[in-house]
Each structure stands twice: as C-alpha cells, then as structure tokens.
Length: 228
Image 1 (cartoon, helix red, strand yellow):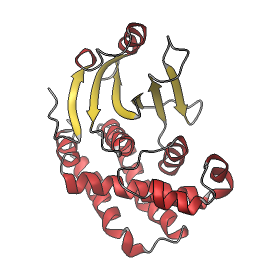
Image 2 (cartoon, one colour):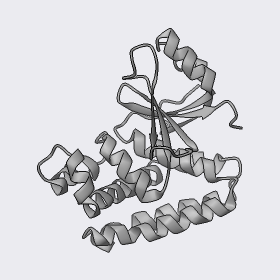
Image 3 (cartoon, one colour):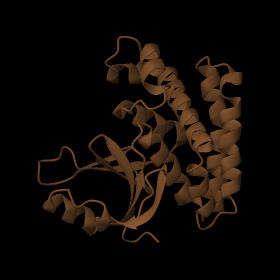
C-alpha cells in the first residue's frame, strides 16, 4: 500500500482507493480506468500529477521525450518575457532538464518515481511549473484576466500561483496545459448531475494521454484499461 511520506505512490488497483465514492460514480470510474496513482495532498498535487503523469507517458517514446525537453528548455523565454530575473529560475530549469535527461534511459519509470519522491527535486519541478504558469498567464493577460477574480493578474499570480502549497484554479490548469502543449482529461467526482462523473478535456477536443481524477479539491492520476 501507499507510503504516506511519498509525494507520488506506486500504481495500485483502483478498488483499493475509492471505496467511499458513491456506487454509480465508482462503477463508472472502474469501467474506464484500472489503476490509480495517489499524489500527496499538499496543495501542489495538480502540478506534481501533471508533471509525473506526462513524463511517465513519454518514457517509451524517445522522439516525444526529446520534443518535450526542447519545449521545457525554451520555456525559460516565457519567464524572461514576463519579467522574471533569469537568476530566479535558472537552477530550477536546469534541474528540470536534468530530470528529463535521466528519464531518457528509464523505460520502467523506476528512476522517475524515485526522483519525484526526493523532496528537493520534486518541489523544484513544482516550483518551476508554478513560475511558468504565472509567466504564461501574465504574457497572455488579455485572455486570462477575464477568468481571474482578483483585480490585478500580477498580484493573483504572485499570491496564488507562484506560492507553493496554494491549490490551483481552472485558469492555472488552462495556462500550464497551453504553455507545455500537454492535453489533460480530468474526471471529476464533484459536479456532474449527482449520479454521473463530470469530464473535462483541456484543450477541448484533444486526445489526452494524461488522465487525472479530481475529488475533494485533490488530483490523482488515473490509468485507462488499455494502458500498460
């Protein structure tokens, strides 16, 4: 079973986790998904789930992994454009690229899981993704400011996005998905019509390779039946 000290758990059969979900929703989840990976509920769960889940999906596709590495390397330009000092993020970005390079020889995902459960490494990845999300929101403020309730997008980013342990909002998910070119399918136990799950694909119409379960303000990773 899961070690409570882990940031990212081993992959487990869904049945061991979701017993408290009401029966119709539980059956619907089990009909589509076989496994689940728990993410620690520390306010950083979305960023950690997205990063781990996406990297795991790239492990056996060298070309996609190389493409994503280029995307991550270039993402520093997004931060510079938003006014971040390179010294404030260079070490985080270098660590991110280093993690990707270690993934290149990691077909089973053992190294990936180990890296994500090292506190300094894991939190550095989350911190970089938070800065990238903030930068992307600010660089595309004409669009995103309509979705932020705070009167000032910059203040919102500093307080809600860049700060560790702050739960993410839908607008942050949208921004990070666009910034990294990662499509996400969110299966939500909240919402829907009470009996059914709610499904959100970001961006709309995409074919996502990353599936997240949203339940009581928390994200975990789901694995479809056809996933090995």
